[in-house]
Length: 459
Image (cartoon, rainbow, N blue to C red; front, side):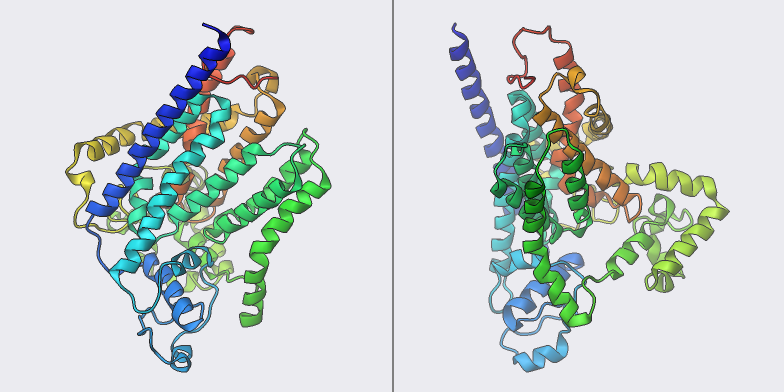
């Protein structure tokens, strides 16, 4: 059979497999949405996001007020007395919710927002394939398949929380990043900056990665131009500047640091427990009598961390250097209802339908192995290019992804390492977990023979 015909057949087979993965992923997500029984009114973080969107839509005020739901026909002057504008939460996800809210709250509005998340979550599977299939069709299908099966990514669509939107925006950024090279036109760099900033406006932990990315562009061997880097910055500024200006006009500060202080405080407890009390797991701060004081001042928090670390140096060194990474990458949602649910549900197909609970069972079994492989893959991509047998463009992309993972882990060695925070990173972690396998297959191939993965980018 001619080589071109074989290549076309493999491409068609890959597209067929991708279609099956997308349909299966969509089925899991839609059935989880349709069959799960979730409390009607959001609570916790979800209540805050909802109230920000509700108040913005109905009263034109970005603030969650007193955590109470005012009737939509409340006089705006009265509403202004009840709702103080603030900057505690970045506006990305509340702005998404405003697309579905109007007038008084109803289940139909919430369902429309959740269905939107089902759609975005399915598109994320496609983005995972598009981002990593240039390294081989089987590799791309593997990343897409794991993304489709992840019960955490499926169940995040049940709640009015940021993870689904953030994961979609992050993977859209990763996809654009996979297309970038030194010869790329400026609009691609502008779009890269726009998407990264939109992700930042949804989950702010990623904001400093912009500067990591710009630094990497400067020192990359691909010789990116100053104009290209400026366009990344311009794209990010287009999204973030209105928010920073608005905050400065309202409060005099461009950003509210209170959430950062709380996150550093909440992450200071070894094994996420206060003095090893198991009943405080995930909520150690609530058992600490010093919590009110620690929440108010970064200086006080850092001083107290230093004092406790000095008293038990080995325990705190292990927690900050190893324990936090293990925790943020772990399977169970520590501060949540269950291993795969953030909030309690009264019914779910994961409790009763074989394809659901079996997929969750096997994903849990391999999760630890995947996370270890992801850390190995994050290091392997820094091996010499000749050893990896990859093009300069491919190496640039892989190392940019590696830097994102390293940045994520370093960030959560400082702040609270709740496992929920790693859920949007799962497609990227899965890609890095499969890379050591791809690497071994590639270096074991005799130069000149057919690529067993489906794509040869070594030139």
